[in-house]
Image 1 (cartoon, one colour):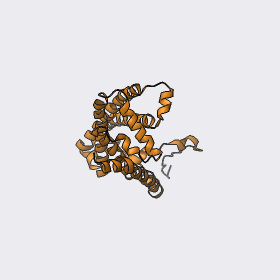
Image 2 (cartoon, rainbow, N blue to C red):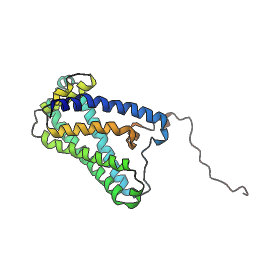
Image 3 (tube, rainbow, N blue to C red):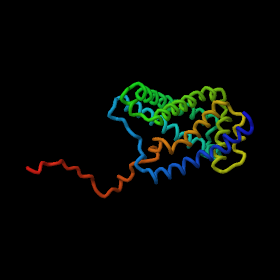
Image 4 (cartoon, rainbow, N blue to C red):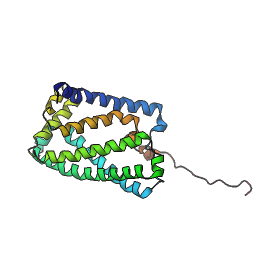
Length: 232
């Protein structure tokens, strides 16, 4: 890959994507709070939605958590715990592989439902269709990278990506150089992941940032009354 393109994609683009993610989410929540939702179509073909949604969300959340812990935990902590780099890579391959398979099966079910059910298709926005297709592609890239990782089980590739990710968050000017020689499939996976962060605030994905924690301290319960006939 060209040196300038490598520096831009992995040294500058991450800051652009993360800035848009943060500021875009704040602005949308502040100015368009009623659009901050997943836009559920649960009433339509519910059984397939449940299976697809559960598999997809569990898989994606497990992958996100694994990437967060695996990439951003300082290397010295793993060394202090006595976890060899090769062992850490094998753990990432197995856990990521299981979560990735769950996620892509779920995404496939959701795509089939969204594109082949006339009623669901009629209620789907272009952004909804684009998001699920891009996420499917990202899951496929992640699973494909496993076959490349199995060819390098010494853990050195893993260390490169950890150094890059931690370098981004510590504003290391040389962060991009850590992954210059890595396989193109990893670079494509990272670039697409950053692009997902970029359009995140403008899609239904924002609902991932919400949790119904307010119910924990809500002072009272919602009271629902039936409408009575005044003549009664």
